[in-house]
Image 1: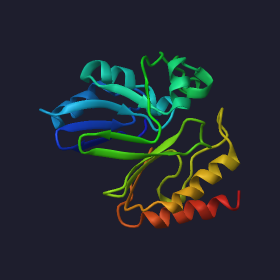
Image 2: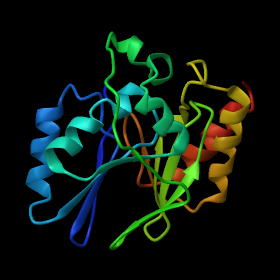
Image 3: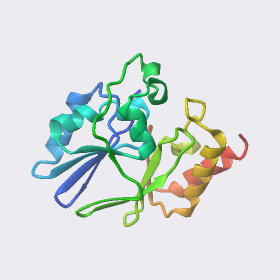
Length: 204
């Protein structure tokens, strides 16, 4: 039920994309610490406000430092927190508020880390993708998955037509590697996965 959690390192800095529910927080923190010795840990970039992606963020930054960063719409939901919009009720959990979320909009830059932020609503209002324009890596949250899958739009705040538009805009990006919020990642032919998702949504 947890999301994928990605650790990005460049030079002397490290950051996470998403944090899971927090159920495996001890193991996650140990893994991060073992791989970032001597680096500055910047915190967690959230792709969106759903509990399976953000539930562990506050505890991770409490233990390791840094900040939780998110879009304005995501920050508003997780700062409440809004039990319906985070979907924590689906996990039988009452999510604690994430305090002092830093709002990010167009770009995240720190040292050699440089990610374009692509608004991608539809699965939920606050979702974004993170695109490394140098490596052409795309961290796409629950927008699309490998093997042609797409994120749900029937949860609170979801919208089918908005979701279709966000998926269609992926075709404008140069993508070499696709890192979704669940399941496997794709290093060989991400364009095929994007095209498959776009094609599937035309029939919905």
